[in-house]
Amino acid sequence: MADTNVNNVDQKVAQMDSEKKEQILQDFEQFKGYLSDKVSKGQKLGLDEEQLAKAAEKVAGYLAAHEEPKNSEEKLLQELWKVGDKDQQHALAHMLIRLVG
Image (cartoon, rainbow, N blue to C red; front, side, top):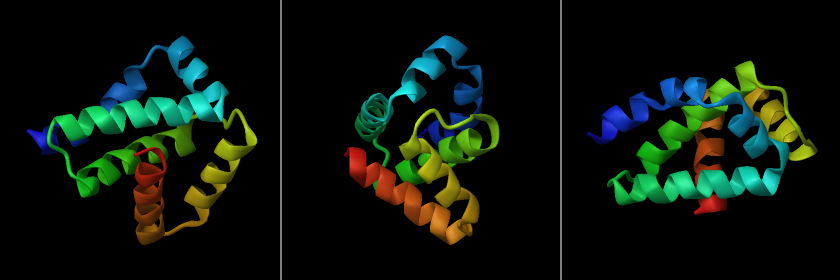
C-alpha cells in the first residue's frame, strides 16, 4: 500500500486545484507547512523516510517542470533541482523531508 501512495503522487499533484496550488506556492512558509502536513500524513500511513523522499522527488520533479517559482526560496530549490543529478536530487528530497519533519 505504501508504494501505491508514492506512485500516485504525480497524479494527485497534477489534479490539484490550480487556485489551491497557487495559494500553497505563493509563500514559502505556507509551502513548508503544506509539505509538513503531507509528511505527517505519510508517516501515519506507515511511510518511512525513504518512501517520503521518493514522494518528495516526484513532487519536486513535477514542480520544476511545470510550475514557475513564486518566491526566491522556490527559485533556489528549482535551480538546485535542475543542476543536480539523480543522487543529488534524492539527497535534496531527504533534506526537504527533514526540514519540515
